Structures are given as structure tokens and as C-alpha cells.
Length: 432
Image 1 (cartoon, one colour):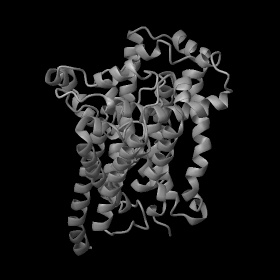
Image 2 (cartoon, one colour):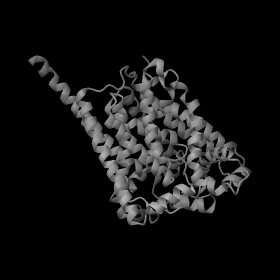
Image 3 (cartoon, helix red, strand yellow):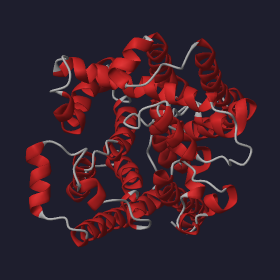
Image 4 (cartoon, helix red, strand yellow):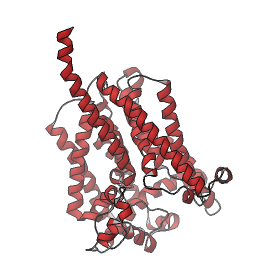
């Protein structure tokens, strides 16, 4: 029976191989004239910056391989079967995560109504297919604490996905569907695609790893990336229609399919280019690392104190905003995940960051393969970050922090339950 490790694209190295080389080659090969014509920016990224980004990606891969070299354990054949005590903890966590997620969305909806959201506004957004320039984003602007609750949804889909591997429940399927629909509405109405991606990608990772153990059903899974690209274009186009096509269709000679391909390539190309633009700026000795540790600076309490501004005298996004305003295009504002640590920490610091990150991700992946609670719960979220690395450093964003906390607390409870169950087993055996 195949193991989860048989899926090459689920591994850290495989996922990076899937997204980094092609996206980076695209960014370098697009001529400056096309950058200026389609994305309204000059092309700055060249061979030197591309080599730096490749070295950063290689450092991440090396970090994961170090873990594999030191720990040669193979994945479990019965993945991800968990003992009863740990399953009980997981079921309890599923209910808590669901209630917190729904509560967050209810509070966000109430705040939207207080700010002026009405059914007519939602109807207009749907009928006009013009959400990016509408007022919904301002009406439902993030609120510290409330938005954190909605982000527990990331943790929920991981927990629910693992429970579905142990048996289907109509209640579980219904709750999972509700969370996914809430994420879909948020992604569509508020033009926040990541709100849906960060729910769907962990489910794909868990479902594919489980299905791979059934040779008659999962033999095609190693080739999933081949089928995923057309699906990605269709889904991206569906969201991009209301996000940008309604504006550009009267301003371009491209057909809608051509526009979708061009736009998708642009998101990745301009991300690398934005990274190169930031690296070209003179280093500010007073600037503190921001994006690399964004979750710290935007954490509840720290954000309200404006600690970053107090310590550095500027906003954390000031560098990127300045670069986009002067030489870039605020419409394409991804900072480039492979550039962020170097921008914040310097060349050596950036490489060290990726080496350390690689080791940590490698440990999570080995735990995932062995069906350890920490790996099972955390690696699907890290996997999302691996796929999004060309565009931004997802792992350290403040939006992921609530999910990390919930998942790690759940993992600790599962480990404790597993130890307690192991200690009680001999006593039950002796008394039987």
C-alpha cells in the first residue's frame, strides 16, 4: 500500500519544485516592454536577483533534506489512523473550532451592518460583477480580534479533514460545507482569494495523502499537478472576472482567456519584480524586520500599541508602499516571498532564515508522514505557504497566527491524551 510520501508534490522539496522554477523563469523571460504594457511597471528583476531567489529556495530545500538525512523513518501505511484518546481530543477541537469560526463571521457581519451593509449593497456587488472597486471591502474591513476568529477556519478544515479520514459524519460534512461557503463568499465578495485557498489547499493535501493509500483510486495522484493547472486557470478566471476584467475589458484587446493567462503570470512576475525593487532600495539602518515577523507585529495587543512604529518610527509596510508608489504598481502588491527575508535581514540573514525554516518544515513533514499530531495538524498549513512562496511569505503573516495557536494547543492535548492512554493500557490489560 503506498505511503503519503509517495506523493512527490506533497513534500517540501516537491512543492517548491512545482512552483518556483516555472514562476521565476516566467518573471525573468517576460520582456520589459510587456511589463510596462500589461503591468504598468518597469522590469527590474534580472539574472542576479533570480540567482539570489534560487539560492534562497535551495536553502529552504537543504534545510528540509537535513531533517530527512538525520531521520530516515518512513511514513505509516495506515496513515493517518489515530488512537481513540487522540480522536476524542480531535473531535472536541472540531466543535470548538467550528463555533469560533462561525462566531467570527457573525461578528464580522454584524460590524458590516453597523457600517452600512445592506442587502441592496450585496445584490449590487453580485449583479454588477465589480467587487474590487466597490464599497464592500471598506464596509467589512478587518477588525482585530474578530478577523482572528474567522481565521480559526484554517484550523477547522485541517481538523475536519483528518476526522473525515477516520469516517464520514453528516454533521461533520455539513459544518465543513458551511465553513467553506463562508470562505467562498469572503473570497468573492471581498476579493480575498486567499481566504478560500487557505481552506481548500490543506483539505487537498489531507485528502490526496489518504486517497493515495488506495491504489485503485489514488494511482493518478502523482500526476495531479498536470490536471491542477487547467483547474487553476478556470478558478482564477472566475474570480478575476469580477475583480479586474469588468474594468479592463473595455481597455484591452485581449480576449478573456488571454487576459486570465496574462493576469495570472503577472501576479507571479510582479511579485518577484517587487522583491527586486525592494532589494534595490538603499538599506535604512532604522528599519526593523517586518514581513518576516509580521505575525509578531500584528498580534492582538502589539498592533494596538503600534509597537513597530514606536520602535522604528515608520510603518512596517512603508518600504513596499514607497516602492510601489514610485516605481511599481499598487495593483500588483505582492512583496515576493523569496525576497522578504533578504529585504528584512540582509543576504546572509535571509539564507539563514530559509535554512532554519527548512529544518522546521522538514520536521513537520516527517511528523506528518509518521501521523504525529503536530505534523498532521500543522504541515497542511505549511504546505499552503510552500505553494504561495513565490508571491508572499504566508507562514509569518498575522492571518495564520490564530490557526497556529489553535492547532498547536490541539496537538499538545492530543500528545497528552496519547501518553495517558498508553499509561492506562497495562492497567486495563491486567484487570481483564
